[in-house]
Length: 149
Image (tube, rainbow, N blue to C red; front, side):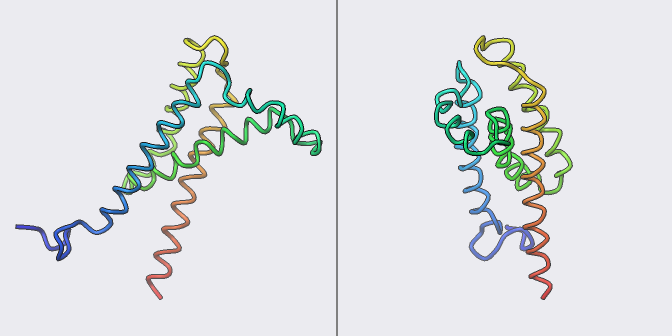
C-alpha cells in the first residue's frame, strides 16, 4: 500500500521525473568535467590563440583571469545539482565542492605532469559550487514566494 503523503494517484513521488532528469544531466556533467580535469594537458591550451586574440581587445582580461572564470563556471552546475539532491542537507554543498576540487587538484598534481595543482583553482571551483548553491536557493525562494500568492 502506498503512503498517500509521499505518492500521488499515479504512484509516483512528486518531483521524481524532475530528479531523474537532473540525475541524467548530473552524470553527463560529471563525465564532461572528468574529461576536462583529467586530460593530460591543460584543456584551455588548445584555445590559447583564440583567447589571446580576445583578451588583446580587453586590457583587464588576461589568460589567467579567463582560466579562473572558466573554473568558476565549470563548478556552478555542481553546486546546483548538489543543492537539488541534498535538499535537506544543503550545508554540505560547499564542503563537497571544496573536497571535490581538492581531490581533482591532488590527482592533477600527482599524476598529470603537464597539469599544475593550484590554490587558485581550488578557490575558483569552490566559488562556482557556492554560486550554484545560491542559484538554487534563490529559485526555491522565488517559488515559495509565488506559491504563497
